[in-house]
Image 1 (cartoon, rainbow, N blue to C red):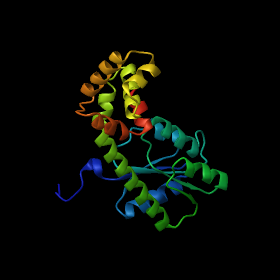
Image 2 (tube, rainbow, N blue to C red; image 1 turned 60 degrees about the vertical axis):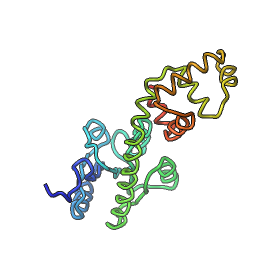
Image 3 (cartoon, rainbow, N blue to C red; image 1 turned 90 degrees about the horizontal axis):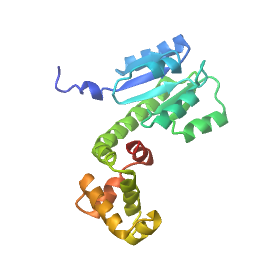
Image 4 (cartoon, helix red, strand yellow; image 1 turned 90 degrees about the vertical axis):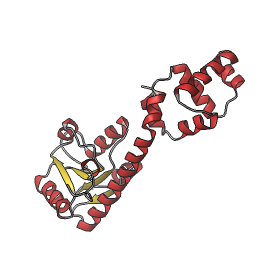
Length: 217
C-alpha cells in the first residue's frame, strides 16, 4: 500500500438514501468521479438495518420516501447520539420543512435538480464536520469510560462540583453529610484520574450533554 494513502478507516464514504434508483445512481457516479466512496440505499429501513463503515462520512437523504421519512430518520439518528451530518436533497421541499431540517443540524437543504458543485461542496462540509466529531469522540472516549464507572451519587457530586458548588452546598442539596460528600469527591477524583478539581471540572466540561447521558446509561 502506498504510504501516502490514508488508512481505510479515515477514507471518507457518503451514505446516499433515495428511493429513486436513477437519482441514487447519478449521485453515486458523481461522488465516484471525484474519488469519494459511497453506499446507496433505497429506503431508510434498509439503511438502518445495514452495518455502516466506521469512517468519516455524511448522508445525502431524500425527504419523502416510503416508510420513515428523511426528516424522521434525522431525528432518530440524533436521538441515538453521534449522528452523521445530513444533506437533504428533495424535489418537494418547503420553508417549514427546510427550517425543521436546519434546526436539527442539517448541513444543507437542496432542491432537485441540484448543481453538481453545490452538492459536492455540501458533501465536503459534511465530511469535514464528521472528521471533527470523530476527533473529539476519540479524545473524550477515556473520560466517558471513566464516568461510566461512577455510581449515581458520585455522578451527582461530580455534576455539582463542576457547577462550582461547595461541599456544604452539595451536602444540603443531596441531603447527605459533608463527610459523605468529601468521600464521594475523593472517589470521583480517583476514578476520573484527576489530580486537581480543575482537572476534574475540565474533563466534565469537555463532554457534551449527550455524551454525559450516554456515559451514565
